[in-house]
Each structure stands twice: as structure tokens, then as C-alpha cells.
Image 1: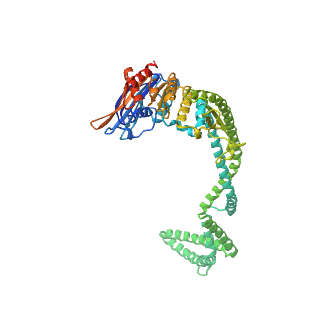
Image 2: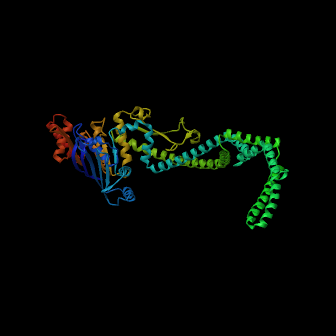
Image 3: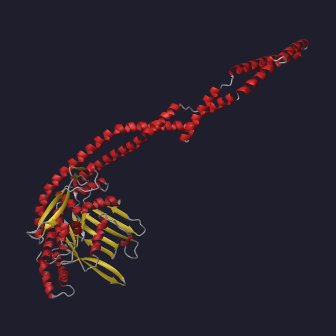
Length: 565
């Protein structure tokens, strides 16, 4: 329950402090005085979005601080999990700065906005003055039915199973798409793999072939040159080897005379051995070398094949071999994809079966809840001045375009909400045919229908504080008194804050606050004051009498206020 609320520099509010109590707390005041601003401030501490526009003119920051007591157990558990303790009281403070350095505090500790929003969902429900317009959108009817029946947990489970179904379908589609794409390229891949494999390319082969080609082209020149060397060194009549042999004998004789020539003899003998070895090498080489046109042609063909592949694959031999490895991987992936599809299909079928099972369970629950909801809604709206109203929850099963076949079975489709399409029908006049609520309900009827639904839905929840912002729009007279009693009933189990223009509702308040606006030295100030019993009578009289408050209006107001005591 909200015990205290302090607002500073918020819109036209300079500084306001409210002490709130249990039961029905009513805020009244002239149009434009700033009543809704107070509720907007509460929206801020419950996790609502905000901009610096709400900061009071000429101020640098605005702040809202709220003290909540007697916290519901689910919230205490959430706070404990978030590291904020397990106390029965909670202080929330939110500061909005023009510099953009906005801050949120829970019991003095900094808090992220997402966590504050979760906390706010357990503390406050705000019912805005235009919320009844949601009834005009049939897609909201299912949510209202689930809230009434307490089916949120099953609804969340349905969403989880639907997400799993979607993920399984996406995975299956993706692998099938990749597989189909690869299959279209499979023939090309296999042709490339075969072509490169048959070529038997080797790194360094091209350079080796070029060297061999160069030798074959110059075979005759090499042969002649080596033969000439044989003649010069050993074979010819005037060969170097013979001449050196003869001189070696002469030099040896001289060395016998002078041993100082022995070194020259040894060097000359060594030279003779090297000449013989060189001659042997040349003779061996000329024995092997010969011009072979067939070998040259074969070699040139091989080089032409290598160059063709290099041009085709736009790379070196090393690049082509890497392409071969990549193609082999693609072909292996194709095989793996073929093996993966049955597994993914089984996963998808399991997810679809799970989603449909949950959808059927949820649908059966909703139909059971819908019968009770119909009876209680008709009873509630009768108490709101709509006697004889017929209310129905209709389940539609029409097939819509835009849903993939795997999510439709037997003319029905499954979504994250299940298999049901729900729309509220009603007839406010006995004997008249029921029609879609969104098409025939008037503004006043919408307000009362939404109030009836909220009273049924909210009184079953554990949110301690409910805020109603001008839910009395479009009604008056006896119906206004009935609506006020309905709010009073809700306030029996929840703290209710209500902004109203109707004296019939204000007279029922357990605590009455008036919001006033005044201009001081050219600046606008809004204040909030808790009224005494005497002041309450005066405010209700104002609401009854308009511009001029008559004695009759005062007496009427006193009767209304005291009649509720």
C-alpha cells in the first residue's frame, strides 16, 4: 500500500507531500488544476518512461519519492532476488535531470529501470481515463479473459512453447534452404573436385617442368658444348690432359734435382685428376642428353594444363589446391545436411505437438472460465445500471492469411496466445441480438463495462494499490453513484486512488484530497491538500453547484458525505 508520496519540481507542482491511507482515496479539483499530474508522478515511480519535459520551468531536476508498506509476498521475493533486502517497507525515489543523468533508488540503492518496472507491476495498477477504449480492440479481449481466469502462467507457458516451435521451424527452414542451395551447386562442386583431383597438381611442379622444358629446347647446344669440352680436356690430339701429363713427367725430373718443386708436382698431379673427373662428368652428361620431340610435347601439354587451371580458377597452384579442399568440405557439408534434416524434422514435430497440446489445454481452460466470466459480468453491469444486459465471450476459429502452413492444422492456427481468437459480444437491451461490443457500445457503456471487468480482474490479484484516472467519463446521476459504490467495494480489498469530477464518487471517499492551482508573481503553483470533514462537504458542494454554491447544494453535499459514514 502507498503510505506517502512526495513530488518536487514536477510539471506545475513545486513541492507536494501526501499522506495516504487505506480504502478509497479521492482526488478532486477544477479542470486543469493538475490532478492527473499526481497520477503521472506515481506512474514514474512504478517504472514509466519519462522525459526532461516534465521538469518544472527554471529547475534542473524533478523528483518523486514514494513509501510503500505491507508489501505483497511475490514482490518481497523479487526484491530479495535483486539484492534489495526483504523488508515490509520499500522507498522508491526517482530523479529526472535536464542533464540526462536520471537516477532511480530502491531503499537508497541504485536500481535499473527494467527492475523498477518489474517492481511497479507488483505495486500499482494504473487505469487511465481512456483505457476503456481498449475494449474497442478485439485483440485485447483475450488478455482480459486470461487475467480474469488467472491464466497468465499458462499463457506464458504457451508463449514459451510457441517460441520453441518458431525456433525449430526457422532452424529446419534454414538448413533446408542451405541444402537446396548447395544441391543446386553440387554438380559444379563435384565437377570441380574431379577436375582438380585428376590434374594431380603438386606444389613446385610448374617450376620443375619449366626447367626441364628449357633443357629439352637447348639439348643440341648442350650436347655440342659438352663434346667440345671432352675434346679439349682429354679426347683431342692436343688435349690438355695429354700435354699436362707430359709436362708432369718433366717437372718430376726437375724436382729430383730441387725438392723445392715437389709442391708444384703435387698440384699438377691434382689438376690432372680433376681434368679426368671433369671429362668423366661431361662424357656421362652427353651420354644422357638427347633431343626428344615427344617428351617436349608431353611436357608442354602438362604446362598448358596447369596454366589453363590457373586461369580458370584465377589463382596459383596453391590457390587451386585450397579450392579443392573447400569444395570437398562443401560436399561433406551437403552430406551432413542430409543427415541433419531428419533430426530437425523430429525436433520441429515435437515442438509443434507440444505447442498444440498446450494450446488445447489453454483453450479448454478459457472456455471454462468464459462461462463464469459471462455470469459475473452480467451481474456486475447490472449493478452499474445496465440491467438486462447480455454479455458473451465468443471463440472464433477463422483462418487468416499470413500464417505458414506448419502453424495451422485442420483449419485452426496456433499463435503465441494459443489457438483461440476471442471477442466480446453484448446486448444492452433485452430482446435485442448480441453484437460485437466494439461496434455497438457507447462511451458510457464502455466505461462501465471496463470498470466491471477491472473490478472482477483486479480484486482477484495481489496488486495492493489501484489508480483510477477519471473512470467516470461519460456517466452521471444514479449510474455515477453506482460506479462510486463499485469503487468503494474494490477499495475494501485494495487501496484505491481515484481522480474524479463526480460528487457521487467523492462523497464515498475514505480520504479526500483537493488539487488546486494558483498563480503567484507570474508563476503557476499546484498544491494538494487533504480535506477535513467540513472541507469535504464544501468541496462536494462545489462539485454539485458549479460556479455558484447555494445553501441547497451545501445541505445536499452534507447529506451525501454523512450518509456514507
